[in-house]
Image (cartoon, rainbow, N blue to C red; front, top):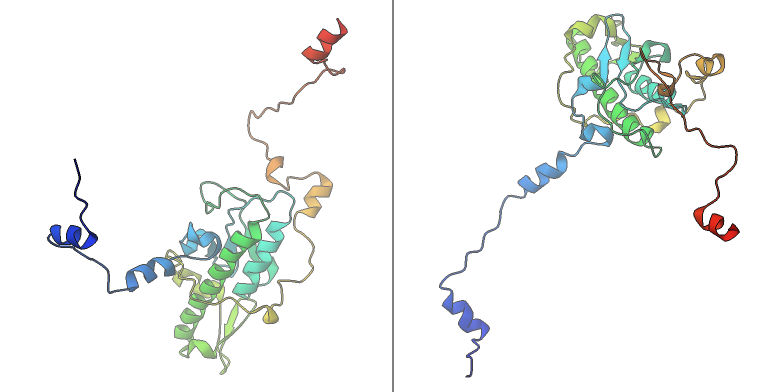
Length: 241
């Protein structure tokens, strides 16, 4: 029995019709690509998850990476202070807390600065821009004419307003846009400078410096107890017999 093998033209004609569909609007694909945020912002998009502006003119940052002795508490504070135009002494760090801090996953692989630091850079730049806009309205001038030093916004005509005075009006419960570019490295005054690490004093005095120093109520410790003499393997034991 011979089977008839239709040609490609005959097969296509037998289908009756072919439906071809494609999108003429590339914005859909572009929107998904543009939604990607840098660093740990990708999974923690709310601005107030990272930074809070306090009534005393200070700021509090909420890193999602823990201090294990690698010095990230100091480094992340430098990054935030740089972008916010605040002195180091007025940037507080809230120890990583699963009920408050952004979820940055594991602290490993030297990724705290790469991911958490990047997130704080962009978040800090955006918070500073928001504060400048509020100050511009308060002082009645354009935001791009203002300067900031140590948390005080000043205009060319001598007007001044501090971050603390703007704190009540700052609404950071919004998604980060990452559209505000962080400062270029050439303008850095805090990042890249050698400063005393915050964790060293407690480290040398036996204080609570790292997450592994945590002591909880009723907490117990366990360790592996090994024999003084290494046990012979079963194979070695049989050979000796």
